[in-house]
Image (cartoon, rainbow, N blue to C red; front, side, top):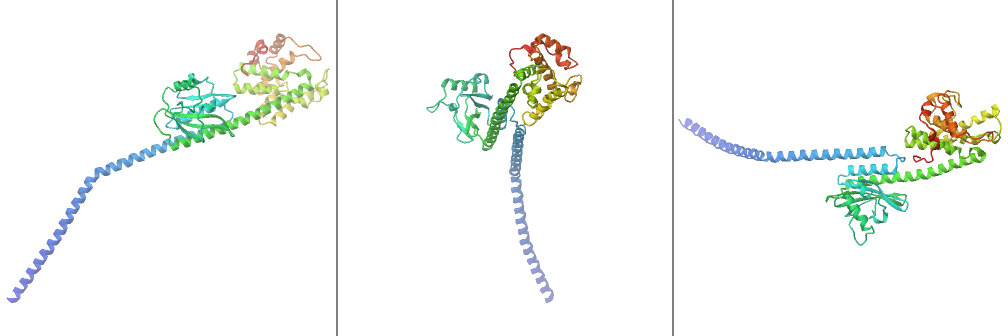
Length: 431
């Protein structure tokens, strides 16, 4: 019995201890459950915050992507402008393109203008976002405008008149009228060739906005591109003037050797330009054929004086020497990078529509268009000019001969476009 009592007591204590352990475990479990419930509640409550944070992050990413997309479009436009860079483009067209690009790429810009010096004064060569009619004929002075101390500078109220202003009030008022709105800020860039300031480019904001650093960088690029263009343009113009003087000197040398050709080259040039105009050729093509006319006989400098100035009929071998002048002329202009595109016109100006001309016996449309035009002009002037062995032909008779030779010596289509007045015009407004 005692053994059973002791066992019962032991089991009882084990039971009590188990209950105590279970109670402790349950307390910990309940505590953990409560903690989990609290955590779940916190998570539940934070879900809207997390959703908001996620939405904001998504929005920021979308904004960043949009900024990146716009930035890429801007730089694509800048790259396109570089690829289209041609120093032969006219100043107004080029600077107008730069200004349009600036207003497009610089988000803060609502309007803009380009001012360039011309002689002793200056003028607006391009305007965006303003009434150009009001200011296009204004004669300006570069000193009237606030000058950027650096490549690019931002001004407050650029048209505000103060004690330092030198711009006449009436000019200032016209510019305000052209703007039509208050100009809050202006970003200005200095245009220069070497160290010489030749003008300014201005971009205006009509609202109270600051120009960003990114916009300033774009403006600096546009100013530098403009300065590169203006510098190249100036150098090309100087070189072109030098080239023209050299060409005219060569023609004068020819006229000194052959007095009967005096004025011939210039007349052929003018006739050819008129014909090109009648045919609807571009301004650049008219200019080129004019210079082809000036140079068409320059190869005669390579022909001996005795042959060039022989008063009587030429012997066959002498005529072969004369015929070489078109080849000599081609070789002469091929040495100039600015004139070499005229070489085919000069080489073939004695070809005939029927193929019986020289030096290559080309026929029909095998003959370059410029050469076909020069052939008509050259023949008309030769017939209407005095020679040691004959008197000049009456212009109407000479034009009649041109018509007779249509389809034989000359391009019939071109001849059909002409009239006697083509050769008798007093002025050439298109040259």
